[in-house]
Length: 189
Ligand code: PAN
Ligand code: ZN
Image (cartoon, rainbow, N blue to C red; front, side, top):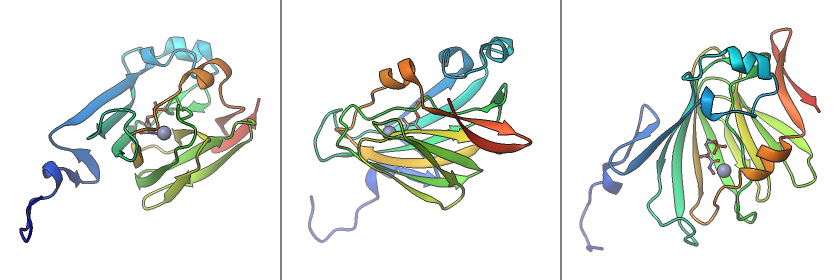
């Protein structure tokens, strides 16, 4: 580190229009075909174009996965849409290292962040432009887009967090977010 110099910002990363972009940003996407088993209505799922993009993630991961004390940053964009009465949403996960928390914050659109603790208690928070969400350690998290526009949110999590998708893949969340009379409703299952 040079002393008494004014340097350019970190690797010219920009949260431009609020979506992370720049060198070393890892882009990934999930299409309908990648989300088998995530949505309850398997008939509606089969009838959708399997190439439809459900969400994209742009992540900056400047530390090796598993490094203690480092931080990652990511933008998630969830497209509007539904599978039956269930909104397009992320797969959701516990962190592999349960002792790691995370921040999400809303950039654009309307969403609902769904939490589930280890005892399968489920609760949720509305996500909108400027909303801040603290995901406590040990709590699974998933986001649904409940609006007609793209839902964009940013996230900051530890490089030692890791992702455990298995528990959600096998047991799901204890409640599903569905549209009833045009409104989102958390339905216990
Ligand atoms: C986020 C999520 C991102 C995509 O960056 O990874 O929104 O959701 P899934 O990972 O559940 O598919 C995060 O929570 N990182 O820890
Ligand atoms: Zn996470």
